[in-house]
Length: 505
Image (cartoon, rainbow, N blue to C red; front, side, top):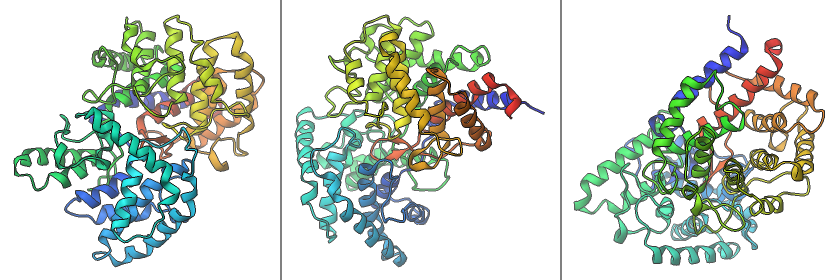
């Protein structure tokens, strides 16, 4: 019979070996599935249509309430997709009006001032969907959306000026601005912008061009491969991005590093090959979420932290383009900043022995009155952002000790009665892992009983070699990079089991 620690280590080792395989593992997306149904449907649309209907919430909308502004895009896209298939499936009609009611009831959330935590590309995508809804005869008022429409206008002018090419951030939202005049945005994967939605729309635009027959076949194969990454084994059910192999690899290894497991002798035979491969993938200007996509701050900073911490000599110029006077950038020229990316940047500065006094005030400004950090543009979980931010501050020592202690008290006070943590009072595995990782690393006061109860909850809800389904990450809508969050979960459990022993198993 195996001990708890042996099972957990086997689970974690299997996970580490799988990092980056098949382009990464990622949850299915309502928005991308809806756009696929509209513009490039699979031969059998029934699985995708039925799945789309199954994702509608009782309030009529699609998307998790944890990220309210990320619900409008998938909801409107789903309505437009279902409307397309009403002649084929009349029962879909009953799902459309509740969706419209949801949008009308929540349109006020787009009144200015717009927040920092805007979903990726929403300023381009939402106005486009509103225009398409109007053309389809759907009655939605435009007035509440004027601020986001105006922001989209600014972004469109910028795109027109820079003329982005394949594998660039703007092309990730190509479905909102592309047309037949700029079809040369397909990259080596066969997709457009690593986005199934953008690829589906590209296929729609390219279908009449006889010179693009080979490229269309590549795009179709891309969509088939992207669908397989969801693990649902159903045609036409698409993720929000693919491939994500370097994103998965860099951030999973960074999760291990933050948990002090990157150098563990128990894991070196599986960790070291991943670290070495990551080093080979690093470009002079950083890392992207795949080898054929533009570099970005989050992937670059996570990878630099892992490699620098593993003894690699990585030039500071590798991440220089993502550092400005106040914080770190996800992409140069981005409109909204991110505490999570900046927290990774502070970690990197610490590893290089550099002064971090310029980004830390930004982190402190983004902290709320309760001593925690709300979710940001890349992740809706306040526990995830708070873990990264508090970890970064802790590295900078005594001046931030009181801040970190207040954060620990705040996180401790949010424990649910069952021992777990989670938004809206319902405990979930991933956020409980974030919380316990923070409490383990930042022991400012006696909270042993809180950690024991949290550990007991995780053990009770742990299922070996089974991925959880909570979705806290954000791009165009919420999603789950399955192996990244599993790395956080298993790291927390392994550490706690080594601390408490197997007595509680």
